[in-house]
Length: 149
Image (tube, rainbow, N blue to C red; front, side):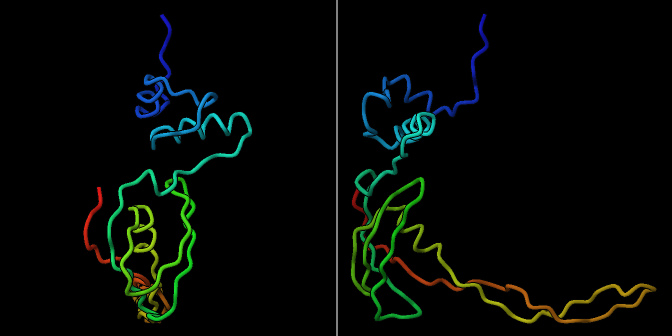
């Protein structure tokens, strides 16, 4: 009896059972991309990222807090998506969820001086101030208008 290799992810195994072969065809579903990229790395080929066509769209109103009149030119390229575009504050766009998550996840740290008591030994405490991050301020907002499934 052979031991089964359980290191592979369940979604990868499920897709392999469907009959997707990365050497024969390009990815056509989101589930195909991890299989194709694993095969491409092994064969020293460039990996591929899904485009916005693979995701459902959501109609959102884009807002920019710091420079509310400037156009935002952005490029999102990660394992979830490869997308580039220009967004004008106040306008309504149909964006996919990975782009919305990326935009709303960008924030600016807020720093402040905080008083801290340190033990100086012998039961004495010395109070000093340190600059620490005390919060975050969102840079962009994507207000949902409707969902395009």
